[in-house]
Amino acid sequence: MIQITEEQTAQVKYLLEQSMQGNHILFDSKTLRRVLGTPPSSDASTSCVAHHIEKVMGLRQLAQKHAYLERLDARTYDQVVRSYFNIVENRLLESRGSAH
Image (cartoon, rainbow, N blue to C red; front, side):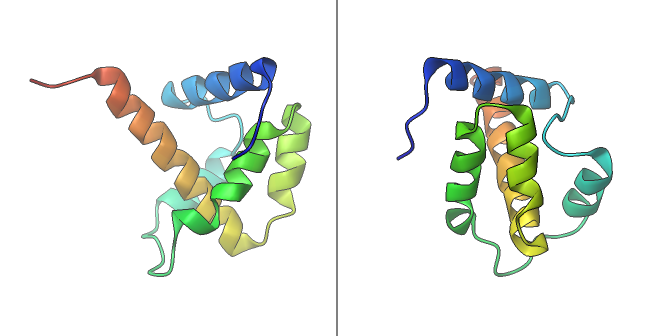
């Protein structure tokens, strides 16, 4: 488990809230269209990229987050994008509450 400060927790919350509103700060729109517009590979696993997402979220500055993501190989990067947006989607569903 990664430990982050209150300030970093606020940053994570901010990033997720912005993504939920369509303001994607971590990923550019060209990348999002490419990755999310294709079916996931059969070997895609969120568990293998979870530590990358935790690492990105633990970094203090946006520039550090971008630099870390840019160092990932293409396959891992695409899996991180998919996993991140699974998190965003789950947050959206949670924020809507029960449909009953």
